[in-house]
Image (cartoon, rainbow, N blue to C red):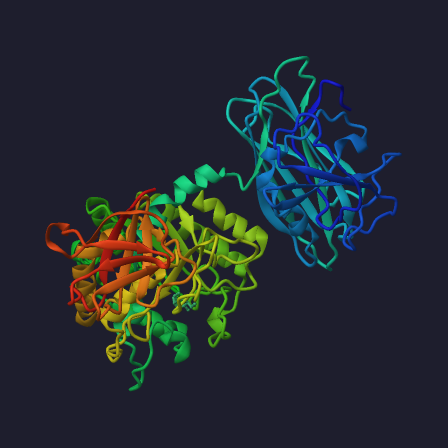
Length: 633
Ligand code: FHN
């Protein structure tokens, strides 16, 4: 199968295998000095799920290995044990396989998963390569299917023929390709598993075939179809933005939260009041938001210091707030308004340099037959087939949203249900490929993590370390407009929340529920203006910052930073004129208040406990005053 020329370029396997024996030198070809090895021979058959390795076909003796790289232990299946000639493992390059995603994914009982993408980067155009992996254990019904595709190579798209069934335990699957210019992607998708069971794949290896002395390239296997650098680039604007506007606007807005004399509803009014589908749809005839002014909306967001807007394209009531050809239950066709507000908003966002994203309720839809209603259906017309809903409504809607409105920065899924099978979410996600840079949240469902975590109406005490996260929040009680929703958080509270979230590494997506006439309620506008006033002076300490360097927030407030600068957001101004920054060891070059004219210098002194800044007796802003420390990097 392989020759001495073949070079093994990456490997992993066996999530549960435990190291037992010798630590030996790193194998030849290893470029990562920190790698240590341990190996053991496995003699027992089968039970991978129980933590032991299985026997592979023929007489091959399985040798499992673990490698520790940057503090993470990887389990590797040695190609040499399979009769392959291993020229060495460039272990420095397998960091992206750290969580042995494939093993975890495919071991899951009950349903399939994926796709999980692996990019093979750095392979040399013109050379031939081979990818292999092993079916380590499987107990799936024969009706389960597994599809693997190789994309981006010169070879035709390649699929491991499983003929409608998972290959047996011990089978080796492989695919060869001639590398074209550009990277190769392998997508692993496992679908359909009625009746339980599980399967574990492992031993994923990439070889250069018969390179014949030719340099096979610095091939790396990377998880996710996107390199970390590419992900960083894609997420950059979002990470720097820190502050965005959520807009919940739909047919429900026309009710102002009132139904049959009771007025404490919001965007859930249709469900809460069990309004029959036809009766709710009839509201559209009176929905005529003629005061809608995209320019004013975007300006309000911009003046508040917000960098992106996410608006409900379709909420759970199923009413599309855009002109859809897929179904007439939309603002253009069903109302006297006869305008497409998302089109107008998209144009204005372009003009005012504001990112625009769409909220889309993908599985819950109270209007369309067959869609889900998480609290149960109440109208016979809601009965139907989810597949039909998906095919006729969701996919065409998504295609329209992804293609008619220019750049779409965010797709904000919501309320995933059990109908979100991998096959269905795959089809939805395929639509997002029409917007290559798009960022999506973690509410699609199935096994899709998404790009962002979405705590709702709360700020996690310690942020969500290592994740991109965004707290979404209402100013009052409801997301959609309710005329009685007047007990709002104060602008001071909202500003401090923005600071708190930023200091913990998150974003703040603050909601506005416009009226049925198309206006932002005055009470929201007032708060946004006050936030904007603060941001005008202090926005530098929010946008583009990361959490401060201290493990604990200081007693007086919060800290954010940029390279060479610490921003001290002081909530509790020191009465003695001494602001102490505990634990700061870096040398302070200058200190000043963002609010001070010409950024006049403040005296600082260092002592064993940290740095002390001499501040004026009065705080410039009782909500939060920002002291900047320029420090030596
Ligand atoms: O049910 C919705 C709700 O109406 C609103 O859209 C929020 C926003 O995050 N999401 C759902 C509840 O989680």
